Length: 391
Image (cartoon, rainbow, N blue to C red; front, top):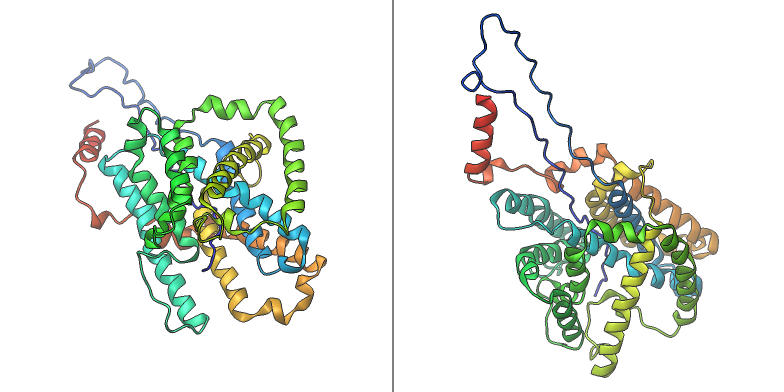
């Protein structure tokens, strides 16, 4: 089983649409011959994206890429394994939580369903096929099947995001959504026969973070950005790193991937319950600490937060290329401390490039296609356009 990183994904953040203010039409206010025509009102500015979330998305995808770079290097390094465990505790929950937060208004409105298809379903189909073909040919594995029901490598997150978003109206209408989502997550962690279809084991175990995002409000993010929270976040994260160093040789990494049940990990059901609840609590605390330390203002990388889907999907192809070519074994120095630092910086730089606007433009056909030809005209949107033309 190949374990996928979490990161986003993109957890897609749709850009706000531009709204316009129109001057009165002639029917509404016919001008007198001697009257001076008032200038048309200028279009309202686009709604500003919140720099905090773009910063958080970019930093989370960098952590995803770095952790992937460490996977073939950490067997002989307790420090690298500890850092890997530390990052895996919160980078995916942070991504999912932000995805849930920006899914709060999702409903079955036609325009939102179209964005779900073009922004999640289409990239899933394209990259699930791409990764499977690359595994078949690049890794000389002719028996590898292409199956849209069995997500391969990174694509599981897109399948999960589709399921979570489609169930958003349900979670928004439940009286105790968090409690129910945690119960579902715990039950999934002790149920061994869920199967691999759409990676439901992982989808259900990570569900509480998406539901938590649905429940959050802007003031909650303002709370974790307070100075007191920032000061508290540093010692908490440092203490977690120290604990991870102690736990590194004692704890299996499969707990962090959340793709297997307690029975499959060889422990009793009650241990699975304790681990599921404990790891969820730790992930929430560390996610809060991560968000507390994320810059709240615009930085040089803020604009890159809009390109995290490209960074997520393309860096996986780079990781697979390194794996298939055997570079890690051919260049043994990469497993040295210096090599680990080099691999970390190299992957962080690569994923940064993948998030840039030129790469996004090139990949738009696969990650952000418009596909107007595939959908029936939206009568509401058509009415809005007719009103603009008439004005």
